[in-house]
Length: 313
Image (cartoon, helix red, strand yellow):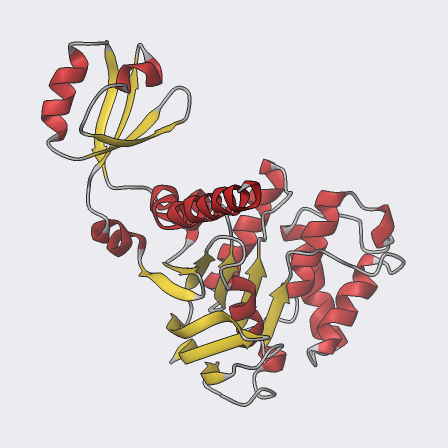
């Protein structure tokens, strides 16, 4: 059984198409990444999965049911816009969220203690939320999403604003939920995290599905035309080559998209500068994302220039 199945789902707002004939399936027990530029339809899709919004066309099945009420207590959501009841103490707040999902207090107290320890939040049970640091509050909000032991956990930018230590703790929490059989869907702009954590990745662009599969399958689709290199001359060494389609400069390392033979390029480059690292690799998810989304940015920039010219004219 799939945890989520969307079949030919379409959603419009005042005539504007937000999601266009979208079909996808999320395997039970997987970590499934949602990626896409701002305004691409990610949030609308997530809200339809949670039945906050209803599709104009198509059907949505969650945990084996198309009934908007049936799976509600088994689905939990962590929004990107964090918000907790600031006057409540931590344990009281976590009990409240668990009770909303129909859990018994005795069961909740056991889970709360376990998750508080796992999230490295010792001795905070009776602290008001308003006295916690930002990182502590975000970890408490993560616990509020998992304390009911959901079958489906939907996370919107779960690592946003966390320092590396707290991000590591939350990452381990997400993996623990998967180990317990929970299906995890998370929306992120962090392509490296999506690469490392997700069993499958879905990308929506202009309301339509443009990627859906394992990272291996997606990279195979885009070929092996990327070279990662580090040279003595840095990015300046890459100027003037016809075979260089684009360069993503990271300062010490450059990712180069080539047309033609990488070995022939290596020979020509070695005649110009010392080469410390040269690797022919599949494109990263970040590179694939930019390849798909960048033309849209260029289109918008062109439209702005055209509008400006019309105004001036």
